[in-house]
Amino acid sequence: MVLPDDCQYHIALRAADLGSATTALLPGDPDRVEPLARRLAQAVGGTLEPLARHREFTSCRLQWAQGCVVICSTGIGGPSTAIATEELARLGITRFLRVGTTGAIQPHIEIGDLVISRAAVRLEGASHHYAPAAYPAVAGFDTTERLVAAARATQVPWHLGITASSDTFWPGQERYDSYSGYVRRDFQGSLAEWRALKVANFEMEAATLLTQCSVMGLEAGCLCGVIAQRVDSEVVDTSAYERISERWTQLLAKALSEGL
Ligand code: URA
Image 1 (cartoon, helix red, strand yellow):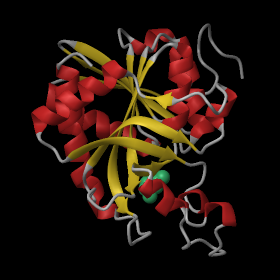
Image 2 (image 1 turned 180 degrees about the vertical axis):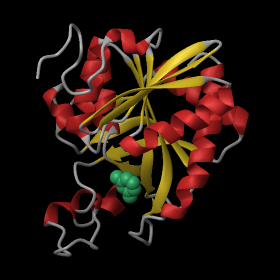
Image 3 (image 1 turned 135 degrees about the horizontal axis):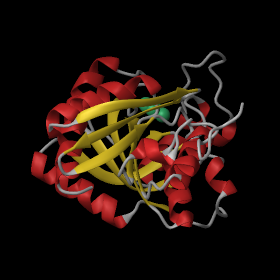
Image 4 (image 1 turned 90 degrees about the vertical axis):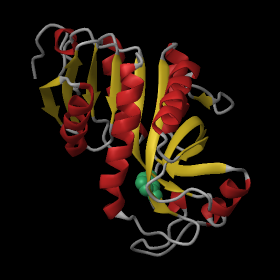
């Protein structure tokens, strides 16, 4: 493939596509990019421009009177998240905000609630290509502060906590409803231990994003909607997705209108 000038190999975007955007919103699923952009466009009174679609990376630009952001899917997990982050950073993005779904592991967090990550446990592999294991996966203070301020202003049910990021949906999150039903010994009892250590939730991308942005000197945050309550279930409640979408749209519209 021959790439025109600064067109990035994986995300198929070039700097001009981003307009004046320096913030990227990062859902995991390519099919969530446009619905998220449409809801936000309605909430902030903006317009959207579809940009590119290549592999797991679908993108569009949202422009409104006071600002502009790019929305780009990361795919699932650390490796593809690291690629999207690297290529968006090369094009001039300096603030990265994951907008995804998660499984809560604390009993007081309910399906449909939002979780803002202040840090992440690095159970995944990709972050270890950026920094040694002792390095913390910590969210950008400015981004987190803005998310918390928006959450308080909109009164959506939200929590601030430590997130555990796993490379796998089944064994790494101690799910037994897999094909084999087996969880290797290292992970047996891990959910209860993370809960005892006050970890709020499981997902698959935050640790990579937070570590990578820290080592690159860039801002990052993570906002997830709870789609599974893991205290006594392994089920993903897809019926909660609509409620979650409404809530993160409210929160993000407020944060964006305040200059996120
Ligand atoms: N995403 C995850 O990684 N885990 C869940 O339980 C739900 C969403």
